[in-house]
Image 1: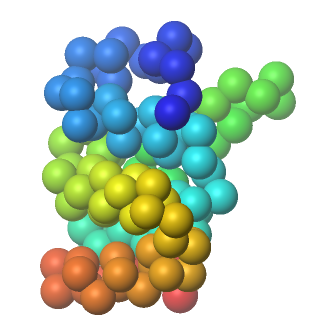
Image 2 (image 1 turned 120 degrees about the vertical axis):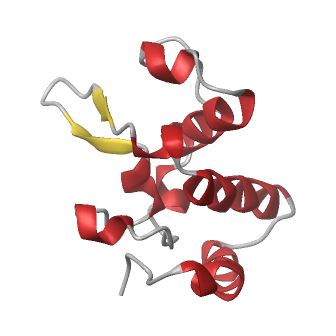
Image 3 (image 1 turned 90 degrees about the horizontal axis):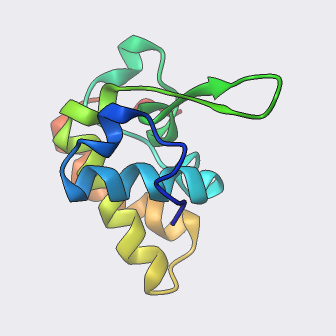
Amino acid sequence: MAPMSGMPADVLAAPVAVRQAYQFAVANPDVVKGIPCYCGCGAEGHTSNYSCYIAGQDPDGSLRFDQHALGCSICVDITRDAMGMLGQGKTVPEIRAAIDQTYSRYGPSNMP
């Protein structure tokens, strides 16, 4: 998990589950970039679950945070499920398959 230092104030004020999802996304970009989101955020230009947390990176390496996941339980639930599966030793393709199976009923994937 990434440290809370450096997180924006709105993330610091969020519920524990949301804070942990942001921490996980920052610390595990390769995992979170490898799984989709099913909340409909593809219409906002999001290309993976990672996009729900991170809007980009500045030239100095600092992250620009996206506020979307602050108010979206589907984004956070997907990330928390990925956290648990990674902890069980699952690979990113295994995690993605489980996420697809569980969350595809909520809407379209934001990944091809």
